[in-house]
Length: 197
Image (cartoon, rainbow, N blue to C red):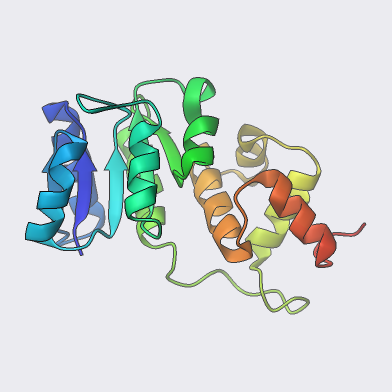
């Protein structure tokens, strides 16, 4: 299934497409410069496997594009790639339905790793802990770290991984538990015995 890269800046669009092809050999990547071209592109190329969306498009600004994509394609992973600092709009994007927020100023390795993790999100979790038969060791570890009130940066530092990788791990955890936020994760964990009360 094709990956749709929607960005009105040709150089950025080509760079993201190149990264995607590098991380998934033979991937079909469809490049669009505006959201309005999507319906026709899906008819021609097929259902999406992943969306990579810029926040500033000629026909969509801010989280409006995220909302539109999630309304039309609720089950498709959505990565927002934006020039805006994460502190400005990341939370709004996640609340609107984006699965991950990636700053364009991140290096190619960081962007590639985050996109690759999204593309392989359903392909098996790490070793399952015997206690609950549901979460991986990493996911159980994340719940404890969330309970400690650690930020993504603090979790990344403690685990020795990138902040983008933390975001992908959290996205997988949210999907596994059927929740949309840290608060909901902690509530679920407490009510289902995944955390000591």
